[in-house]
Length: 579
Image (cartoon, rainbow, N blue to C red; front, side, top):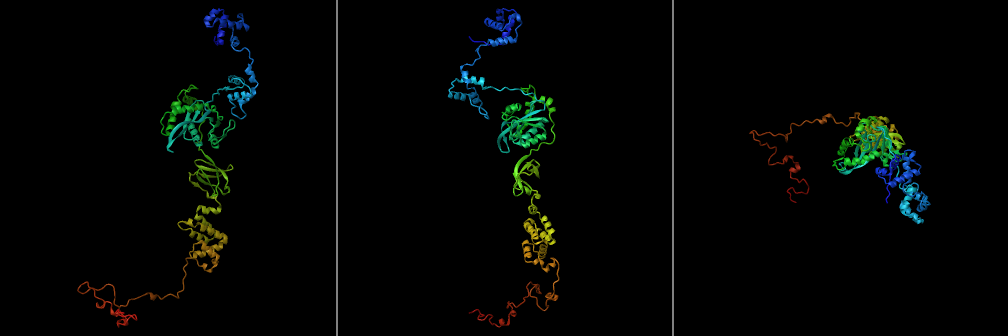
């Protein structure tokens, strides 16, 4: 015969009807209980000292009767198997708990194997009942509900994966993430989409959320992202310096959830799958901007107007009525997320930060410095002290402060001819004139080394000697530093002829000059012209008058006497042409 479990209220109903004078037949017809059960309950009440004349029965009496009459072993003494395992209780508990520092101990099946090796042979089911009863094996932890937060007090922030979306920057589909910010009191939320979880994307998403809500909360519960939390710890976490700077800029408290404990931010944890399934899944997305536009609309028209399963209210309505007035106002400009880095100062007085070069003073060469760069400025720190500030340059750019160079190298590095000319002028008038002519070409930078050597010559031989040598070189228009140095070596800088400066007109002696009349020439009128224009004939013909006899074109009058006599001009040569 099977046993039927009865409740305390059934026993109490039977006792009350019996107290009012109903018979067992009437009680059976009313409650549906058998008369055997009714008699057993009444007998149990009498055994506990209850009398009908003693007063109306109560719940405590019915509960005692139910406990006394519950079937089972009447004795609480352990059985033979339990007694056997009690002798190994501490060993079983240590096996299940594990060594200190371990997350978990041995499995119960392994414990059963080890007990068998030690000669303790018991059924596995008996070992399981013993472990549950005496070793808290499989016991579930109880939970409690936290107190309701005040409006504008807490926002929970978490990243969640949405899916693949096309990215034009790389020309293929990439994984798209959703940064979800949920206000705990009203359950109103904001979704920010991004392709990465880097620090600037994380901060930009939170900034967009504050602008979307029109204010910020006093506390922000975040996950232990590496970009925001340098060292995750349940009691003393270490935050990334930029994110901590951002929290101070906005004025909210960072409250990271305990590591590996999603229940530390339960409100936003349930928002991630809700956004992925209700908003993103099953749609055709063009790009990230398309997803972001639709996410804003979804937050206002769908997620904000639904009836929340926990609060039973519409998040957007509660937000507008209660939480929005309690938010802290946004003060100041939007946070300019800086980037930090550790750089080495190279021998060329520069560091490389995000593929751009920035100069550092000489005394910090080959040292390690900390660099902070935002959209406008790059700040360089050495052991916590600011040593240099530069305007931000794009990748491949450079910004150099020539005052960081040693003084003797600045002129050459700056490629500044005027500065070298001024230095030369300060050492001597003629040195300055020499340097000015040396660097007066179209490309004076090609002569910078000569100009530097000129200044070093003044330091080596003294400005007076070099100035006299420059005076001599200028007199001969000799603009060459190496030959100027030869003038100094040969001692020509002390020559008296240097008293005559270049460009002065000197009157030379006239003893070799020819008389002025020797340059005048008058033609002889008796000579016949042998060329020029010829006169025309009287009849107007164009035939010219011959100057010589046509039969003698060569003009015998022009020959020498020995040639006219037929004497051979060259001895041994026959004039007739015969040998």
